[in-house]
Amino acid sequence: MPHKWLNKVEGGPPTYPENTSPGVPNPPPNTTWEDFAYVIGGYGWKARFVKKDGRIFTAGDSAQYNLANGGWVPYHKDEEKTYNYNCFKCHTTGSSPEGSWNGVAADSLGTFAEPGIRCEGCHGPGSEHVASPGTVKPPLMGDDLRISRCGDCHQRGGTTNAIPAKGGFIRHHEQLNEMRTSKHGDGQGTDLTCTTCHDTHVPLRYADAAGEGMSGIKTTCETCHPNHEILLNGSPKKITCVDCHMPMASKSAIGIQVGNGWKGDVRTHIWGININAVTREAMFTPDGKFVQLDENGHAAVTLDFACLGCHTQKDVAWAATYTRDIHINGIVTGVDEVTELPKAFRLMQNYPNPFNPSTTIAFDLPKATHVVLKLYTQNGQLVKTLMDQNMPAGAHKVTLDASSLASGVYLYRIEAGDFVDSKKMLLVK
Image (cartoon, rainbow, N blue to C red; front, side):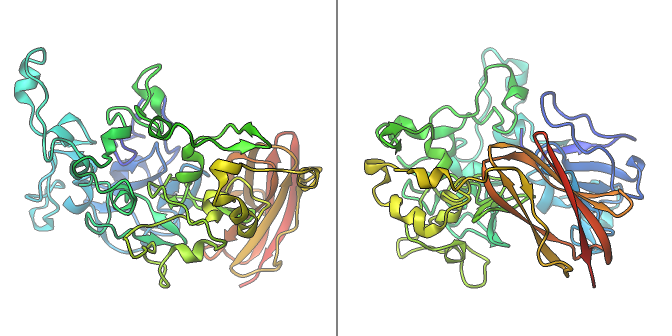
């Protein structure tokens, strides 16, 4: 059940699968559901809207809805973006480059049999299985559903080991590209494949949607690496391989700075960690378009993703003192480290202020809690939700890009447990 599922609009919001997010509350501003034929996604990371004429909605600054913060952002503002075979070959079942799904032959958009990825999207035509499911197994398509089949969609820029990046994060559906930069290999022979770890029939983001007790992971890292625990002051720390080796270094919709660390909204499949005291700039090529590869074609995430996403108060120099022998020596903390945590909730004045077009909002959390940070007009109208997620204790920062906003006074308001506070900011263009 991929988040890119194409959802049909029939005069109202699509019906999303049970036990998933509630979906998009409204269509883009100044439109109605009658204007659209489909929603791309809507219960995973983000939603885009496909008009009945076969074009993706791009008008204005509110074209894409990000579920993580309930905010609208531009998407290829005012460009003509057709929803064609190159897009829906990974969003639908029975896709074909022939014909035009909107009924206008001259558009040559291609056609599809069903919106969303159904069984035949991966297995191929299965009429004999449907006729006799007890005796005829589902057919296999491609390379026996191995990594090359998954890679038809879970890659960008070709099934190579080049990993595209943008804006300081890995772009969001490059799992095959990422795996091919790892020491686990490229899925051939005895190398890891997607199905080594994943049950491909169970969604990771919404496991409950597949039934109670279901899990999308059938093999964990610890199965093959049983002795790689991390000790904290001599005792086992409650942490998994995934926490460090698969940090949120990829971005589908939302990427934020948390203290000195960075967090996207998708876990990377690079697995390797650069143990040197360098920041994320060293992770990418000078133009920022790709992840750096070493002489062996391997990639690695930097410590501001792998460590500082949780240890937000620290820096890469601190993290680097532990990385080389962390599975042998563990981590040692002292009294001075404990006292570094903030003693009280606090919302700081944004800086710079006045600003144009970006500014930083900082806040302190003395304990882990759920944080909601919203931006309002001076009249109290909600502009966007900047954060709506659980956050660890520590000092945190959020960068606001106000390039699409008009000059004026705005309010930002935080809710963190029982703590509520707000401050004014001035945007001058």
